[in-house]
Length: 209
Length: 170
Image (cartoon, rainbow over all chains, first blue to last red; front, side):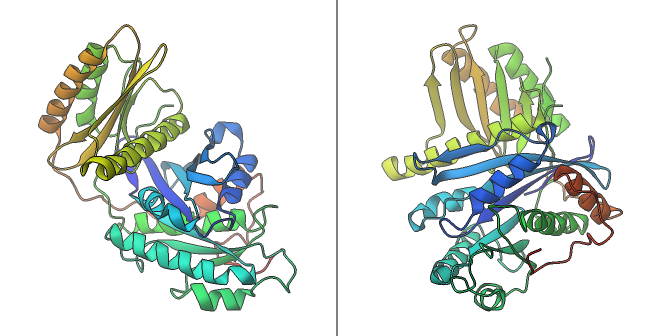
């Protein structure tokens, strides 16, 4: 649920990085965190296990500056990918304005990608959100791996992209495609706001300076 | 220090709570982690992080309560060595909020609970009808977004940065 304050001209949006375990969701946020200047980001919060697997979520607040006259902030979340954290994923998805589905391009992970996409649909449905209306982009991560190990982009498109949403090949570890993915989802979310179709009450951001 | 609020009707109830309960920090947020009002923070990005964690505590404790007791926990309290934290549901007739406050020996749990109850009542009385959100002007939206993200990522804006999807690795 985007929060828009017309008095102070501020927008805050929530973006959730979703996908199977070890697909690279946290890696996306780490890369963004490393790229963005200190005065435009908050601390990256990671609720992780001792082996650095995401336990609850990762969180990165970003200040995007002024867009269409509004001071715009994005809250980037990841969900834990492992199957048994289903309840946690549902909680993190609450109030999301957009979803980045990070798929693992390794051929042996194709079934996990499909299962995670179905899990996303089920969790959106539990929040009474039609998956066809939720802003969504796909990222096919690990496309830098040898061709013999990965599914091709057309294969991944065929398996996952039934809505024909924007999709991006990526190597999140080295940053390829991370920027484009964030730009893709941010554009869709903000355009949806400009079209007045965001499911939100009149509300606002109340941050500090 | 004054409170910062998303909507004017929140300011008086929140300021009253902060003044009366001698709180060090106070956050009013949606259960999804979006901030509605705050006191004690200086940077917006820090407020967002605090709200994300507060929403997570509230959501996970709620689910834990359902597992253990069949219904979510409505309030939580933790006493640290120097500072104490209180989290509670603010169920108004139109929207549900979560409230978090941090206080020290200048206050007490009893005092916080009294003024938290008053805060709930003041918010209930002050809230206006939920209004449909007006659309944001799309003028310069894509240009501004591309330019600002390019700056954030240390990239010079390019004429070809038009937001098209890309399926090839550079």
